[in-house]
Length: 600
Image (cartoon, rainbow, N blue to C red):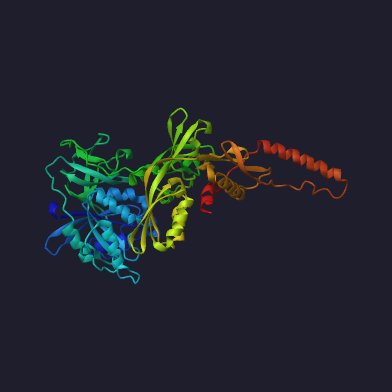
C-alpha cells in the first residue's frame, strides 16, 4: 500500500459522547468485521468498559476503505478514552496520528474534556475534523453546539459534520473528510528505521509486545531491534497489523501502525514513548515522545493474604505495560503488612486499577486512603516529597508545607453557576474568571487544592448541577498551605493506614467525624477501647468503644451484697490487666473510614 493512501487518526471526545458507537459504524461500513462478529462497543474489550459504558484503553484497528475517487485507503483508527483520568491514554494516541475526529454530543454540547483533548490535538499539530453526534435526538441543540465548536477551534460552519453514529447518519461524510482533510504520513522508507512505542501488552507466550507507529524506514522479521532508552537488543520474530486480533505481515513501512514480537521477557524494557530502531542501520536521534504525566493521587495497595505479595507485584508489572501512567513502589505498613504505594492520575483511575487486579489476577486487596504528594521544606532547608502521612516529619522540624494546586475548568449551564461557585469556595478554591461559550453555557476557572477534590468533588458537582456540569483539571503549581498531619490512635497506638494530611481549619471536624465512624466499625472487645484523633501530638477528639461485660453475679441468688461486690472487684482488676496487654484488630472496613467520612 502506498504511503499516500494511509490515514492515521483517532477519535477524541468527552466521556459518553459516542466514540465507541462511531467506531462500531466505521468498522461496519468498511466490512472490517463480519456481521456475525459485530457487536456494540466492539473495541471495548474489557468487561469493565462494557459495564460502565466507558473506554479505558485505546484500541488500534486497521480498516480498508474504497473512496469515491476509486482508490483503496488504509485507515488506522486508534480509539481513545474520554474521562479526565485517562488523558495520558489520549496523549499516547495523538502521538501516533496525523488527524483527529472531534466528537461533540448534540444534546450536551462542548464539555470540559472536549476542550482539554482539543488543546492536546492542537499541541500535536493534528488536523481536527469537528463532528456533532446524536443530531437525531429530540433534545439536540445543533445550532448552539455549532457556535460552541466554532468558538473552540475557530473553524467555519461548513467544516462541521452532522452525524448520528447510532443510526449511521453522516458516516459517508466522515469517511470523505478523513480521506480529504487528514494528510497522509510522510514517506521515509529509505531513512534509518524509527518506530514510536505508543502502547504495549504482555502475552504469556510471546512476552512483552510493543504497539508501534513507524515513522521512518522499514521493519522486517529477522532484524535486530534496539531501544533508545536502554540500548537492549532483540531479534524481531513477528510483525503485524491490528484487525481486531493481531494479523501477521511481512513488513511494517513508514506510516504503518502495528505490533512487534521479539520475545521480550523483561517487562521493564518496554517504555511507552521510547523509540525502536535497528542495529544494522541505527537512527541517530530518537522520536519526540509524548508528554509524561506524573501521578497525582497516591494510595497503598495491600494483599489481604500476605502470601499473595509476589503475585500482586507481577500483576502490577503486567498492568504497567498496558498503562504507563501507573507508578508503584514497595511499602510496609504496621497495620497491613507488605504492599505497594501506587500512583494514579485520579480516583477513577485508582478504582479501575483495583478492579482489574481483583478480576484479571484473582487478588483480594485492601486500599488505603488516597493522598496527593506534598512538598515539605524543613528547618534545615531540605525539601522532602511526602506522598503518605507516615513520611511526614515531626511538626517542630517543618518550616512550611506546599500542596499541589490545579487549574480547574468547569463547563455548566448558567443556572448552576451560583451553586458550583459555593462548592468551589468550600474546597478552598480561588476564583479566576468566567467565560460564556454561548448564552446558556458558561466556562468557570478556579485554582483548587488537589487534596480537596480527589475524594468527592466530582460527585458533588454532578449532584448540584443535575449531571450537566463537566470538570477537567491540570496541575499548575505547588502553593503554601496551613496543613497538619491528623493521627488516629486506637487503644493508644497510632494506626498509620488511618492517618491523613488535612487543613488546620478542618482538622477538628474531621477528627470528630472519623472517631465517630470508627466507633461504629471497630468491634467491641472484653476491655474498653479508646479511639483518639491527635494533631501535633495533642488529642483533639476522643470516643470510646464500651467493653463487653460478662454477668459474673448471675450465679448469686440472694445473700449478702458484699459477695457480689467481691466478684465485681475481681472482674474490674481482670479487665484492667487485660486492657494493659490487649491488642485491637482493626477490620478492613474501618481502614476505609476516611473515605466514608469525606463522602458524608
